[in-house]
Each structure stands twice: as C-alpha cells, then as structure tokens.
Amino acid sequence: MIDGRKRVDVCSTNPMLGPSLRHLLDGHVIMTSESSPDDLDADVVIWQLDEPVHNDSLARVAAEAPTLVLAHPNRLLDAVDAGCKGFLPESASLSEIGDAVETILRGGAVVPPDLLGTLLRHLVVRNRREAVEATALEELTDREMDVFESAATGANREMIAEQLFISPQTVRTHLQRVYRKLGIHSQVELISLAVRLGITTPEE
Amino acid sequence: MSAKPTRRGELVQSPGEDGWTVYVAEDDALHVLNETARAIWELCDGKTTAEEMGRAVAEMTVMTTAESIAAIAGTLASLAERGLITMTT
Image 1 (cartoon, rainbow over the protein chains, first blue to last red):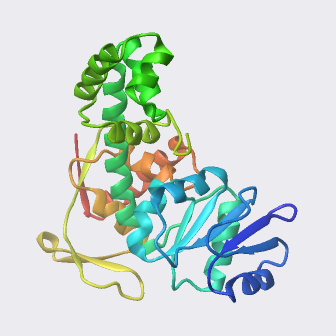
Image 2 (cartoon, chains in turn cyan, purple):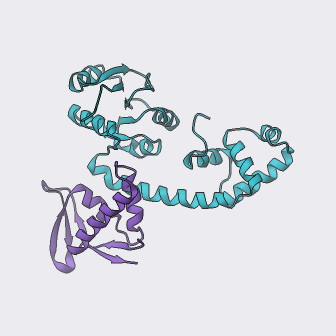
Image 3 (cartoon, rainbow over the protein chains, first blue to last red):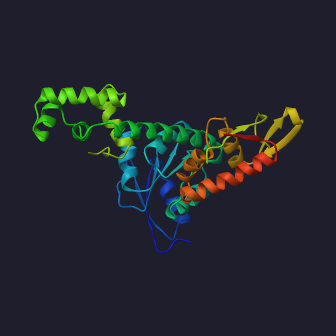
C-alpha cells in the first residue's frame, strides 16, 4: 500500500489514457502532457513512445523521475539503458499499467515476463562490459583522468587546455593515450562511456 | 560464487497454459517452467555465473544484490534437482 497521494504524469497522444488512469488510480494525482513529459517532479512518469524519441531524451527524463515506458518491445533495451524503471508494450491493459505504477512507487521495476530473458541477458552483458571499462579507467594516470573528465563534459581540446593549464598539444597527447587505454576512438565514445560509468550525466 | 551452470534440454516452442516446456532427451523427460525460471534457465550457458545472474536480477527488483543472488541460488538448485542444469566451475 502506498502512503499519500502521488503525482503521476501521463505523457501520451492517446487522449483517453490520462482520464482512464485518473479513474483507475484515483488515490493519486494524474497529470497529462503530450509531446514530452511536463512534470519531472512527478513520482512516476508514464511515457508512451508514439513517435521516435531519442535515447538521450529518455535518459534525461529517467534521471529526473521514475519512468514507465509504453512502447514497442524493440525499445525495451533502450528504455532500460536510459535508466527507466519500467517497460510495458503499447498493448498493455489499463490494469497492467496501474499495477506497474504501484510497483514503481514501491521502488520496484517492471518488465513483461516474456521479455525477462532478453533483458537479463542484456544486463549480464552490460555489467560485464562496464566492469571491464571500470578496470580500464583505473589504468589512467591522474592527469589522463583529469583530461578524461573534462572531455566527458563535451569540452574541446582548447577548452580542456585552458581548464587544466596545459597546452592543446599536451591535451592531444593525453587524449590519444586515454583513447588507447580505453579502447575508444572518439570523444563521442568517451562521453558515452563516461555516462555509462556514471562519471557524467547526459545533460552535462 | 563462481559456479557456471549449463542448461540441459531444449525449449519446446510456444508456451502452454502452465508455462514453457523443456524436453531433456537424455532423460526423455518434459519439464514445465514459468517465465522467470525459463529466463534463468536460458542464462545457464556455461559462461555466466550465478553471481552475474543475481546482479542482473537485482537491477530489476527491490531486492538487494545479496538477496537476489540468494534467490538465484535457490532457483538454480531447483533446476539442478530437476536435471535441467548442471553446475560447473
């Protein structure tokens, strides 16, 4: 049982979803939005991905509020990697959505049973990769780590040089070593790695 | 916990009313698994440790990693007892 009224933001182009959930979850405050979630202070965001949504947008919302995604099953892993707390297929019933909201409010996660195997395999592989990446990170020198962290914010070579009081050429040398040690080839990959390891967040 | 369970048998296509059916030819035996047991059984590829499974499950539940690993150990013990996996290190 959940104590107190919780705020649930329902983001969907389906005009019936919000009112239907308002009836089903009458102990909670149901708000609605259309193109993207409006209330990132909500206790749960329900986001129906009717249209293409970039993974970064998903991650930004999921970082702010526990998010339940309603979408085609081919978006499951995107949703999980973005940090969403729950996923249901678009065909989920109202009661399934309601149960999922209550589960998320209790701190749990929601995934359809038939997608469980796919998700577990993905999580095992992802955890292995992150463990390898974290170990690789430990091989960086302190200065290389400084450069890594600056580059992870999206700063270019000149900006990093200015921040660290070194020359752009020295930054270039450090970055080459960082890329080699981490097995990456670009700043885009570096930023992606930093996000996965929790060193930076997508909005930074 | 470094055991790497390996599954035995083949999944019979499409779930029935009671769950998924696994046929173990060597034993000429049929077993019915629910979705959770099937997901764990499918992870038993001889390369994935019980601890890795537990950590993955913990990410999807309110259980701590330790609780999750313990739950996985229980499920694996049940699968082993039914001859659906073998435990190797």
